[in-house]
Image 1 (cartoon, rainbow, N blue to C red):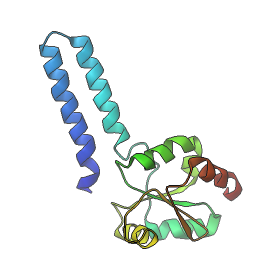
Image 2 (cartoon, helix red, strand yellow):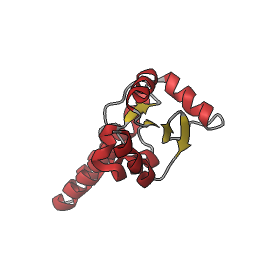
Image 3 (cartoon, one colour):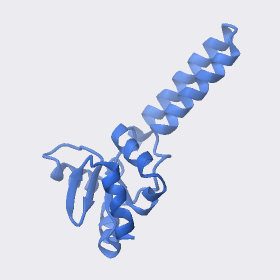
Amino acid sequence: MTRVRKLPLLFALCGAAVSAGTAVGGRPGLAVLHLLLFGALAGLHSPLPFPAPIGAAEARRRSAADGRPVVYWRPGCRYCLRLRLRLGQSARQLHWVDIWRDPEAAAAVRAANDGNETVPTVVVDGRPHTNPDPAWVRALVPAAA
């Protein structure tokens, strides 16, 4: 769980340090810009942009009931963030599983990816798809909903 917070915290602390140094140097406008930039980076690398994660077993159960894909992801993964952002509002209809919070999920991803924790891994009808095209995933949502 602490891995989830390290990178966003590092961005926030660096942003505060850079902003303080810039403000002390007499450039408060640039300091605010730095603070906003590092704050945005911290937010994007945290779990905040993602729907609330559920456990792997619960995700499989829900997917079997409603046919919606299961997305295995982890905070700080730029490909996961790209998928999440490109899916837009339809991302809320998928079942999101954070592999850093659920060891069973991490094991499922390793089994699907030759021992690697490669994410995002999207499971549709029991078949894993590693780092799929977001447009393809988006096309699955209305059919499953």
